[in-house]
Image (cartoon, rainbow, N blue to C red; front, top):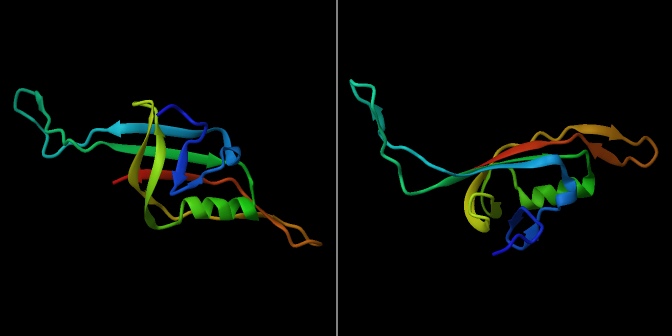
Length: 130
């Protein structure tokens, strides 16, 4: 499937790319995982690479309004295992995977004294595939 202009979605909800900072999407797709690999007495590495590949995704945002924060919380619910569809730069295709979403620190940057509207500091999140 060709790139459609988005990088992550949860179900049918696409993460709004406008919320991402410049260079705010970074991925390390298809990481290999070893099991019981070792180096022998001659210094030769013996790897046992598992068939399951994992991706890691880093996201950084700009400052956020309350509505933008709520949108992110819909796509990336904290402390949850979520199935996300994401752009895999290694395969040049969209793939789905189960990712852990870590706790997100929401820091209020400003509260308007008249309207009580809030803005939040930018966030950074690392998503790690199971």
